[in-house]
Length: 113
Length: 117
Image (tube, rainbow over all chains, first blue to last red; front, side):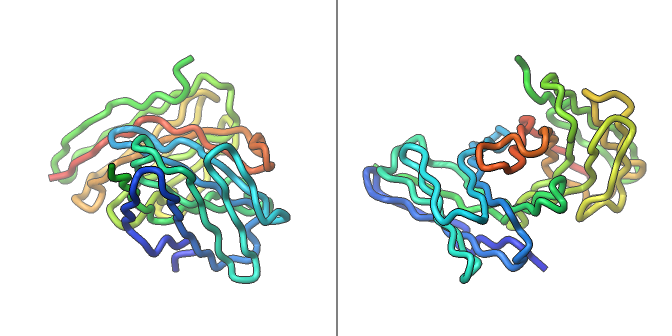
């Protein structure tokens, strides 16, 4: 049973346009949601997070939106740049079990010129 | 500042052989984790530790053992390797609640690619 799902394995976006990556979850006990970015042959690196009491968090070109009623979050990248080409993992955790962070299967984003 | 270091980076084993993956962190983090990454499966938690001398099972613990004898080190052992354990293994560490939103923010190593023939 996948508690965190990323249904799009890949996404291709033109440079300068908006990239939207989606993530769905099933466990209403999750308190925090995070996005990680991973380049080939490297470990994932933290990108942005949001608490369940918020519906939006922005950091430069990156914005995460949370829709608790739909159990859905999305990552918006505007404008998309070539260096954004990577695999993006959505992750979630509950305060009651802070050591267990559940990851989605990832979406490979490709930015084309 | 090295962060999280994993050794070895690559290893090929035969079925039934044993090996240990070593993870070392220099950030004085309390929590440490071992994940495996497989195509289409994302990152799955194998075992984790919330402090020196403690370990706990994650989602996919079978076939693995771990030890955390020192705060900075977390070892992942395979006693009898199987082809199903062919994967990329990531170690991570954090201190709880250090993210700006209060979330746990993991620092990952670069990964260890293991192939079991």
